[in-house]
Length: 252
Image 1 (cartoon, helix red, strand yellow):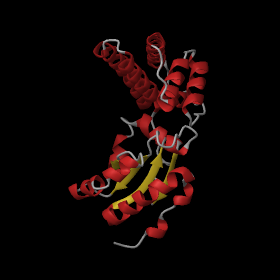
Image 2 (image 1 turned 90 degrees about the vertical axis):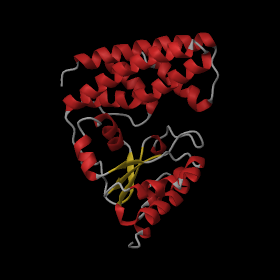
Image 3 (image 1 turned 60 degrees about the horizontal axis):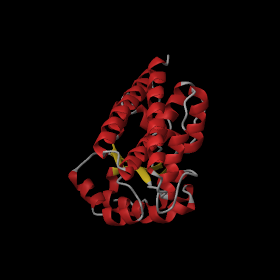
Image 4 (image 1 turned 90 degrees about the horizontal axis):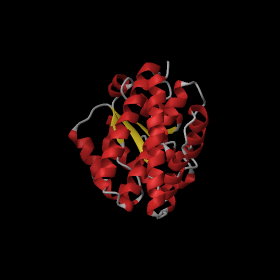
């Protein structure tokens, strides 16, 4: 394996995530060797949304191929990754990326918006997307979210903690979809979650304040009262319903 230690561009990362990612990236280089094309950090750890010790650090690894050995290498690093809040990386090949733009446009758009490639060539900067595919994915995901909200509420039997967790998960899942909806309208997308919710509220005439509140519950570990939880559920459900209808009618 060639010695490519010096090609790690860790100086591109915020200092608060540089130290946990350094041994992780070096371990990937050593274990994966020439099969590793690039390491890209994506998502909230690169923004003001990042909360040390609470937020996850997400990465995308581009490989030449997917032998079982490469999964074993990464799996052997799972314990230290977990301690440092490094999520299991997304593994892709160049061919997988090229053939997935029509079905995972929302995710790749989010990667493109907020990413730093610390090893190899940037795999997402030059990607291009069809608006019709992104619109369809947004509609599908929002309508599926409505189903999950209904089923989740029933399964939770209106228990405060369980319903709170359902709301938090919905709010987290909404952010990339809302950024994609802004992209569909050719509107600049904020990288942070709260500005995204606020901009979508203005552009689509939808209330998103409960989604912002749910984000605060997650990061600040707030324990809301049962009535507050039920009201937040109703508000988020209504917002998702309205957003699904809006994207269904969106002409692209």
